[in-house]
Length: 147
Image (cartoon, rainbow, N blue to C red; front, side, top):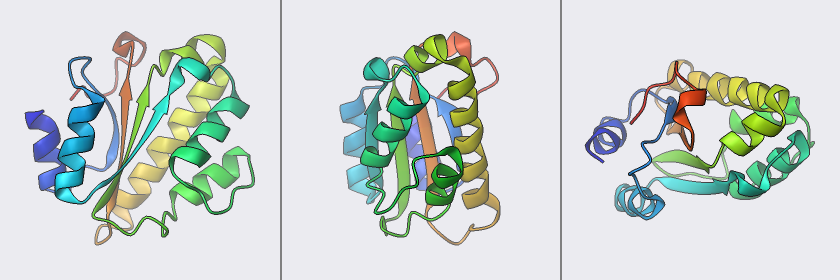
């Protein structure tokens, strides 16, 4: 939890991270609510393809509009104006279900989430940041920092 507190407290390093299995969603929710950060949760157990991923992320992040495609996802993740809080966190539990069933969709989703987080870090540094926390089989993502 120490790494999450530091990450949120310093409002830096917007990005996509693996979340250690020992971190509980309740802990993330509690920490984030104390700091005024919006938290959205997705359960990957029910996500095995592109369409299911797009459906869940649009609900989790409460998209007011959505074209239901990859370009629209990136557009929405670069906007998030309907979530005017100190930061935005997407916790994607069991991400490995999508990775194992539709690797191409998972890779595209990961790339888009990384691009959106980079956008918030570099171009919108004075605005609330975007954090994507992936929890599941972290061995599938050896290049991501584990919190």
